[in-house]
Length: 146
Image (cartoon, rainbow, N blue to C red):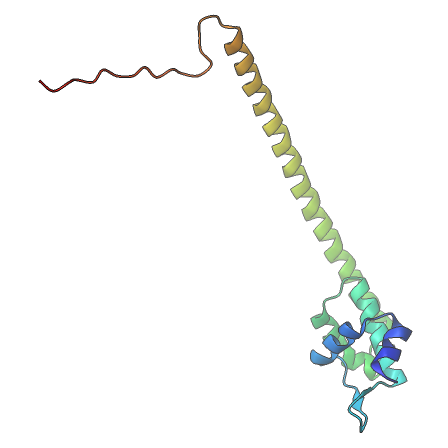
């Protein structure tokens, strides 16, 4: 099948398919016309790649598993172990993001406190009669040459 057919059947863009080929994940044969020729087995590989990408596996990790997938040596236990590892990675990312979120919220609270203090100082200065809000610089006397 041609690349456009494969893209339509798998929901993977032609651009992505060409990228996978460039990275060596796919190796379609070429027709005498030069067009790529994808087999049904490659369609299953593309689905495997797309599903793996959708759950967050890096292309490098997928490439490492493809030979076992192609040869039928990638067991359900292997796939489940990889997915459990992915869940652990996601949990670690979530924990890191929660820590970062807490730090941002703490900084927002700190900034709001400083803003309230600043506004209170401005209000106090405005109420103080005869005191300018900002220091006034008086021009210094200059001596004239004699």
